[in-house]
Length: 65
Image (tube, rainbow, N blue to C red; front, side):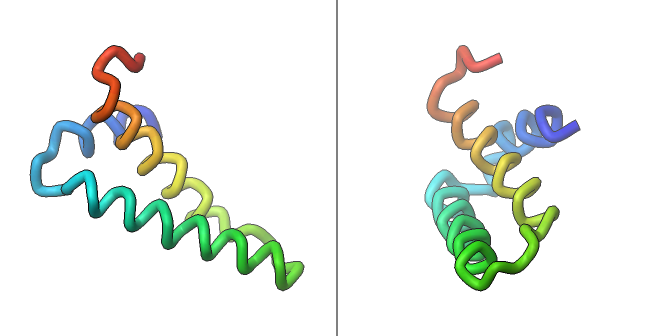
């Protein structure tokens, strides 16, 4: 399912590449803070980061499966 969502997002021009990069940076910070505070990893944060990373990868390399 995350791969399907990433493909849909990659095709949507309403979501800019810069916005994806900013969201990925924000989610990375959120995960890093959880690690520093010895808290559990927020699952939705991790899942969304993976989706947005895949979206960005699809956009930058159209040959990505």
